[in-house]
Amino acid sequence: MILAGYIFFLNRQSIPLDTNLLIGFFSFNFLVLIGFILMTTIRVFIKLQEILFTNKLALMFFILLIIVGIFSASLFLNLNNIKSLAQKQAKQGSVLSQINTIKNYYLTFFFNIIGYPTDKKMTTEKELIDEINLYRVRLDLPLLSQDDALCSFTESQVNELETTTYSKHFESIRVVNDKSIMMKKAVELAQTFDAPVSASQIVSFYWIYSHQPYQSILEDPQWDSGCVKVSRANIITIFGKKN
Image 1 (tube, rainbow, N blue to C red):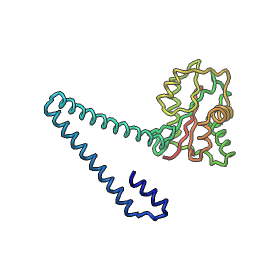
Image 2: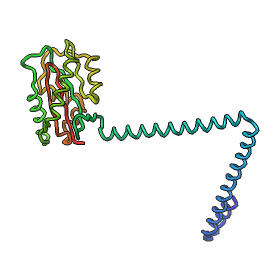
Image 3: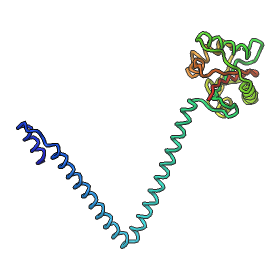
Image 4: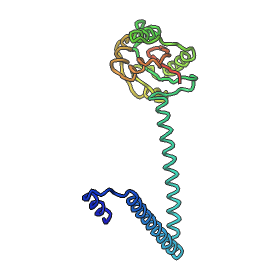
């Protein structure tokens, strides 16, 4: 307060402030504050030591408090590490799953039911690929590359899915991030189609107009690989991009 009054007086008198005086004053006050905190800490520690060594119950409580503190800190650090790892993986794979079966690729599943009962009017694998490529050409994107390993993996998935979902009631899963979830939902949920669905309907209405995750992948040049496999009423489409 004295310093503030002195500064106010100097300002009123238009007398220039001495910078060294200000620095010295604040430095002195800072050292006094540090000394006060240090002395208070030492006094508290000495008092605590006296209580602990004269009271066994207090000593046990203090030791227990230290153990709990160490455990809590360890748990907090562990949770932070898990959170950081999850965030890192989420950034790497976006909302998509990395399937180790296909080396050097990130993959995402599209699963659709094309109709029940099956008939010759059903869409074919070639029709779907042609429709996807037609859409990509309109966006000046290159045609999908059909990697042999990717197509083989896609075929294995649709064959596995066929044994799980072939019944009178079907479901259409738009974007699937995990194969186990896909298999589970394929059994639990159901949607009946009264008529076969064409390739253009799947690409235009199922993927582009109704479900944004599909559209973002179809329009992303990084997703440059893809394969479609049809088995009975099931379609598995897997898109891939290099990781």
